[in-house]
Amino acid sequence: MSENTTTTAIAPFEENTQSLVNGNIWDNPTAFNVALRMANALASSTIIPKDYQGNPSNTLIAIEMASRLGTSPMQVMQNLFVINGRPSWSSQYIIAVINSSKKYKHELKFELTGKGDNMECYAWTTDRDGKEIKGPIISMQMARDEGWVQKNGSKWKTMPEVMLRYRAASFFGRLYCSDMIMGIYSQEEVYELDDGDFYVSPEVTIAQNANAEVIDANEVTSNEPADPPPIEVDDATGEVIEPSVSGSEDPQEKPSEGQQAMPGYERKF
Image (cartoon, rainbow, N blue to C red):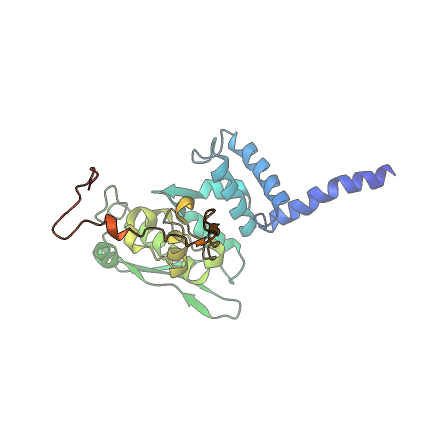
C-alpha cells in the first residue's frame, strides 16, 4: 500500500519534469509552475550572471531555452547576453555548441588567408557523408564597409584575426545550425549591428502591431440590431404616438434664413 502511495505521489512530478526537459512548458501549466519554482531558486543565487540575479523572468527564459537545446540552464545563462534589449550568444558558445553536437565528422575549422587589411576567413567542416560544408567568407573589407571597425571600442582594430573567426562561426551557425543557436546573433553582432540590420519576418511584425491600438470598451458598438422602441399610447385619444427619431430637429426650432443661433445661448421667439 505504501509503495503504491509513494509512486502516485511522485509520478506527476516526474511527468512534468519530463515535459520541462522536452521544452514543453508553455502549454503545460504544471510544468510551467515547476520551471517557475526553479527560476525563483536560481534567481536568488549570487554566482549566476547579473542579468539573472533577482530576475526570475529572465531566468525562466534561460531554463526554457536550456530545455530546448538539451543543455543546463547555467550554461545558457553564462553564454546568453542581453545587449540593447536583444539576447545574444557569446561567439565561443556558438563554436562549442556546433562542435559538441556531433552533427559533423570533425570540429569547426577556420581558413584564414591574406594579411592586414586584405585578410579573409571562412568556417568549414565536413558532414557525415564526407561533403565539405563552407560558411560565408568574412573579410576586413566587409568589416569596414559594414561599419564594424568604426564602432567605439571595436576589437576589429586590435584583434582582427580573432574577430574574423568569431564572425565566420556565427555566420556558419545561423546558415547551417540555426536550430542549435535558435537563430540568435552573437554578442559582437548585436553590438555592431543597427536595428535596421536585423531581419524581422512579416509574421513577427503583424504580431507586434496586432494590439498596438488601444480599444475603449465603452466605444465598441454591437452589430446586433437595436431593440425597437416601446409603443406609447395617448391616454386621452387612444392613438399610438409615433416615436421620435433620435437626433432629429423640430423644423419649427430651426433658425430662419439669415438667422443663426449663437452657441451657449437660447433663442427666444
